[in-house]
Length: 113
Image (cartoon, rainbow, N blue to C red; front, side):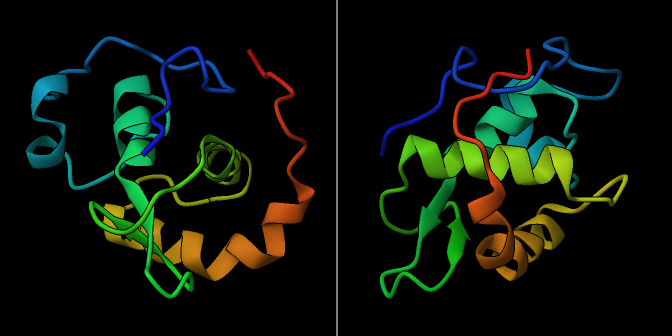
């Protein structure tokens, strides 16, 4: 799968772990996704895949996902997800429920940094 790097991300992030966070243990460390911490966002986005029938996104599984799709999801999470402390399962469900409606609004590669 083509993975994002920190240079690919479209938004500014904190790159230092906050108190209680360990960037090396991210999947065990945080049940919630901090959309302000770069290491959490990049790992979350890179763990996304597509189901074999191409009907939903999966976390930690699934088929190849293009960089552009990952960047669209980053944009969706930063611009449209209103939850303040979303659990990863909630985030994945929200992505699947909102992908079709929002993906066309994304303006590709207009850096926010």
